[in-house]
Amino acid sequence: MIWNFTKMHGVGNDFVVLDGVRQSIQMTPERARAIAHRQFGIGADQILLVEEPTHPEADFRYRIFNADGSEVEHCGNGSRCFVRFVHEQKLSGRNPLKAEIATGLIILKEHEDHTVSVKMGQTRFTPDAIAFDTTDLASTQQGEDTLWVLPLPNHDQVTLSVVGISNPHVVQVVEDIATAPVLEQGPLIESHPRFKNRVNAGFMQIVNTHEIKLRVYERGAGETLACGTGACAAAVAGIRRGLLQSPVTVHTQGGDLIIDYDHQEIEMTGPATTVYSGSIDIDKLVASIPTQVLNP
Ligand SMILES: N[C@@H](CCC[C@H](N)C(=O)O)C(=O)O
Picture 1 (spheres, rainbow, N blue to C red):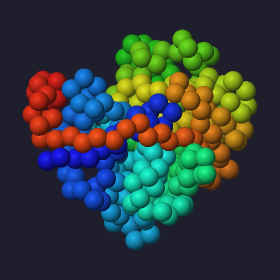
Picture 2: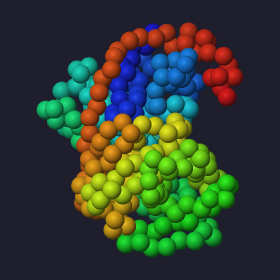
Picture 3: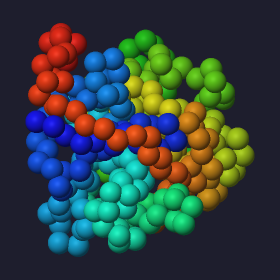
Picture 4: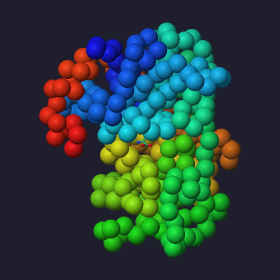
C-alpha cells in the first residue's frame, strides 16, 4: 500500500506527517517504527497522523506516534507542523484551527510569517497527572511548585517539577546545559519504575528571568533537538517556582520557542518547516527491515 507523506520539522524536532483524511492509513507500532527508523526508514522523532475528528467541535483529529511506535497524547512542535500541513495541503483554510488530541482540544493559529501559536490545552501539576508514584519520596515547596526528590539507580538524586501537558514531563534545573547529564540520567528517569507511563525528562538552565536553555530526553524518542511540550513544561515550572516570568524564550539545540503563561493557559509560538514530500510502500518497507531491528 502506497502512502504519501511529508517530512517536516519544528526547530529540528522532525516528523513524518501523513494525511489520513484523503488516504486510508492504518497505523501500527511496527509501521511507525519502520517509518521513523533512521537507517532503514525515512527517519523521524515522531509520526503525525491527520484524521477526521470524532469531537464535534474539532476540525481534525491529530494523532502522534513516537519513534519507538508508542502512541502519545501530545506533541508541541508537531502541532505547529500539523497546522501548516493542513493549510499547505489545502485540507482546510480555517485559521485558527481546532484539533482533537487524546485529552481534548488544542487551538492553533498560523501567522503571516508562517510561525504558529498553539494554545496547549489542559495542564496539571500533581503527580497523578503523570502517573508518578511519589510514595515515601521527599518533597519541598518552592513558590507554587512542589519539587520531588527522586533517587536514580546510578545513585544520582534529582529534584523534579511535575508538569502534565496532556503528556507527562518532569523538569530539573541544571547549572550548565552543555555539561548536563542528559544522556546518563535521561534514560534512567524516562523508564524509572515510579512513572507508570514513562516520562519526558527536561534539563533547563536559567539564563535570566525571561530566558532558558533546554534539553529534553524524550519518552520513546531519546534526546531530540527540541521538544515543544518540554519547552512549555520547563517555562511553566520555572514560572511557578518564581525563577522565571512570562514570556519565556526557550533556546533549544534546534532553535527558539516563545512560551506565554498567565497561570491558566499556555501558549507556545514557533516555526514549522516543510522539508520534502514523497511516497512509500509501507508493506515493502516493513518487510525490508530485519526483525531484530524492527522489534527489538
Ligand atoms: N517532541 C514532542 C513530544 C513528543 C511526545 C513525547 N515524546 C511523549 O512521549 O510524550 C513535542 O514537541 O512536544
